Image 1 (cartoon, rainbow, N blue to C red):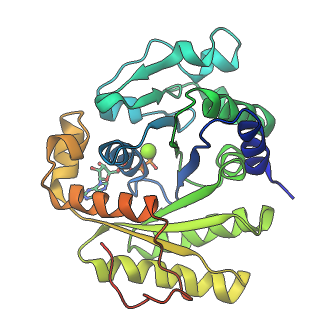
Image 2 (image 1 turned 135 degrees about the horizontal axis):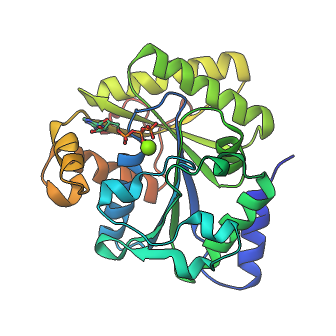
Length: 278
Ligand SMILES: Nc1ncnc2c1ncn2[C@@H]1O[C@H](COP(=O)(O)OP(=O)(O)OP(=O)(O)O)[C@@H](O)[C@H]1O
Ligand SMILES: [Mg+2]
């Protein structure tokens, strides 16, 4: 059984520091909004008095830094090649967000082994003794790297849109994760939806498949509405919660952050199943 997340927790608790929640943001299909959700969720959690670090682990094609308009001098590659310490490569983003940059275009990073990744995550967790959240933006799909990362975190946030291929690929990812760790906490987030009900439908479709074929339920944290302000903010290389705080996408993310903070998830056995969440 892979319980590296437990290993990291033990390591941290021995040092009696705050134990951050380590969340990986993943998806089966690409382009569903992982990077935008990771960044804007991180900033919204900061707005909710949390200390947050963001690891751009879209290894080989990192882009969280580009979306934020932050250009770090050193990246994950410098750590993995032993040139730098973690503290040297962290840059401060907006609102004091700590950003650990991946390494754009360095394709050998796509084959880092699981032990190295886990060691790296444990380093990141030790980085700041007051860290409440470490959010990891991953690349799409079932690469060895993504699966290794999901094994090393507490919770996997699976982002999906209403497109049938996105839902099918989300199920494929969840199946691969649960085959390796049947107890892994999986939390679905709907993105680019026109209504809260459309978001819930994404979760219900995925949950029907996991319940039927994997005998496991997945939880639902909420959704982000389709909002043209997201693309507009990307164009400006700004996070949409900062560029357009009153937009519907920003309001969705706020609700999502509150649900994650309070671990107020919807799942089939929960009592408030009929209550729609944005
Ligand atoms: N809620 C939304 N409303 C409207 N557009 C959105 C929304 N979320 C994301 N987008 C758009 O979708 C595109 C892809 O988003 P993003 O880069 O965050 O996806 P990704 O899952 O990280 O992609 P990749 O798999 O390539 O890493 C962006 O151009 C963004 O503008
Ligand atoms: Mg991305």
